[in-house]
Each structure stands twice: as structure tokens, then as C-alpha cells.
Length: 191
Image (cartoon, rainbow, N blue to C red; front, side, top):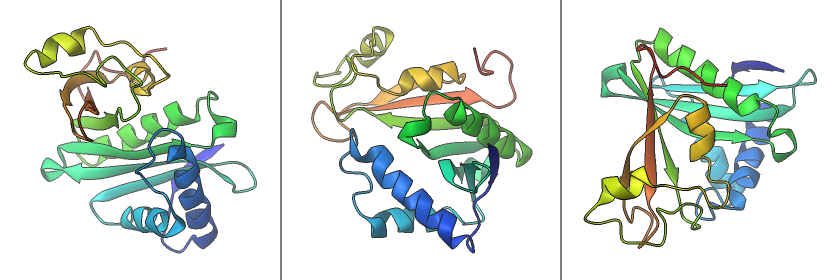
């Protein structure tokens, strides 16, 4: 496997990436990319100057995973958006490698922080389906993963929960906000 830039002229890889995006988000994020047009639009938007777009490919050029980064705060902060790995290749370190690669690319561009929003639209954590107000921080401190929510994957990649947007996706459907430093010690990937 190697990680390379996804380029605007790589039509076959773009098509594979869009299909991967639809399939990867179908199960838990039903409102994400539901058709090829919306997925292709998302992939093509990743080619902007303020973006990073990287794919993991096997020796034959098949796309195994995709990660995107969006510059914010004049390049000091980068949003990880999105990350998807082919279901048949999950659990093999591809996602972690893509996150590590994106962090390095963002750091090279002057990034200090990398953040990601991890929606909980399907009651996958104890933050979903409840009123988080007025003690939002108490709920975050007691979070539990009920159904394989990706926040634990991001924790293994060095991210910490920095907050939550209650009801971001409807009543009881929060967005869990996570971040990691790209330059300070203590937030490197853990094994």
C-alpha cells in the first residue's frame, strides 16, 4: 500500500473514491453521500488550494481509502474531512496511516492542530438520544461507546474529545468534536 495525492486528472481513482465514500458512510450516516453525483462533488471539492486530498492504493492502483483535509484559521488548524476505508480492508492500519499522513501534510503547511467532527446520528454512544444540557462536560466525561462509534479509533490516533455540539444533527444527535496537536508532545498516535 502507498499513500499518494488524489489529483483532478485521475478519473478512475476519483470514481473509485466516490464509490468508496457512498459505501463507507451508508450504514451509519444515511444523510451523507447517498448518490454518485454528491460523492463526486465532494471528491472534486477536495482539490482546492486550501485542501489536502490523499488516497491509499494497492499495487494495482485500487483505492483502499481516502482522507481529506480542509485548511482553517489561516492554516493553523486543519479539519480532517472525510476519512473512509474500504470495509474489506478495515482493521489493517490503513485508516491510521491515512491520519498520520494527513497530520504530516498539514504540519508541513504550518498546521498546529488537526480536528475532526464525529457525528452520532444512530445512538452509537451515550451522548446520543439524551438531553446534554446543561451539563455537557459531565456527559462527555462519562462517554461510552455502545456500537462501534469511530471516536475510539480517533483516540487511538492521538485525538482527544474537545467538546460536543448537542443536537447538531437533530434532537439527541450530537457531533463529537475531537482534536490533536500537530506540534506539541503528548498527542502523538498511541499503539
